[in-house]
Length: 82
Image (cartoon, rainbow, N blue to C red; front, side):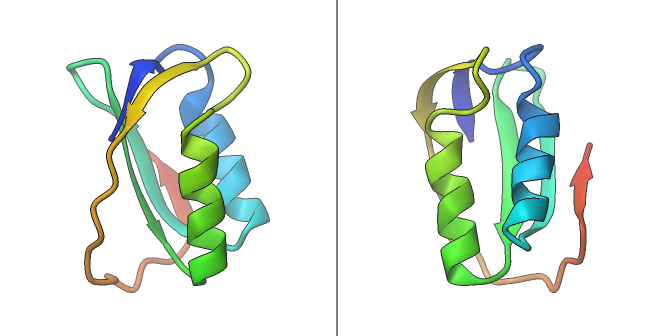
């Protein structure tokens, strides 16, 4: 979960492009409370790059906090913006 000024700043699209660059599958979506939720699945180094990226986000974002929760892989393929 990513909070701060993270909606309306191309967070989801930039997240998708960054995931594609690092061969990470998953999805990202805006939540009604103004946060962004994402699931990353793939090579550990790629997933870590996405988690690190989420702490800054795209240039127009102001990330306040990032909450990470590890889960069992679901076997996702591709990366979706929801």
